[in-house]
Length: 189
Image 1 (cartoon, rainbow, N blue to C red):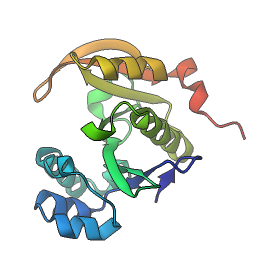
Image 2: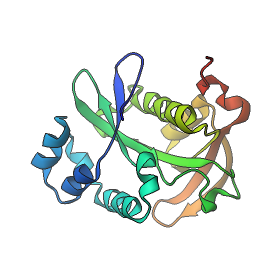
Image 3: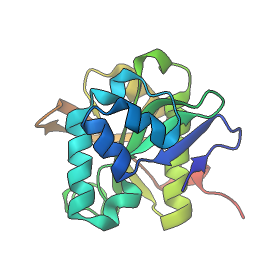
Image 4: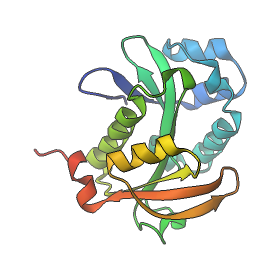
């Protein structure tokens, strides 16, 4: 399945187990041959994340559609970053924040930042979740010192609802998008 923007600028392409395995093993040639994209070296440095998502996929096959996707620039066939959900909707750890909601994270590689790719990828991912699963509550947790991502979350319509301590990333501010703030994502048929 491929989620592509109306302008054809970006596509969110689910990353297969085979691609993740090649990536975590540093098999750059194999990873590139699976899709034909240019893949920046930053992707191959994300071994902890890749291992975690491989484990998540193996532990819960129903998670696979929610897992990592490449953010691909269609005209140049280049992987600009990645985006994906941390779990399936309704994960127990979100019950106190947004029952039935789903949390996602993303990264755009350094060379491609501040060009609108992150916001477009977020819109595409949210649109996919609404269109395919009627999800109505989204969560992002952003490192407290990442002011650019805080501005982006607020611009999209996320509201800060608290903060938490992440064992890996430290202090994070937690944002939610739901209710009236979600209306711009819902297609009128």
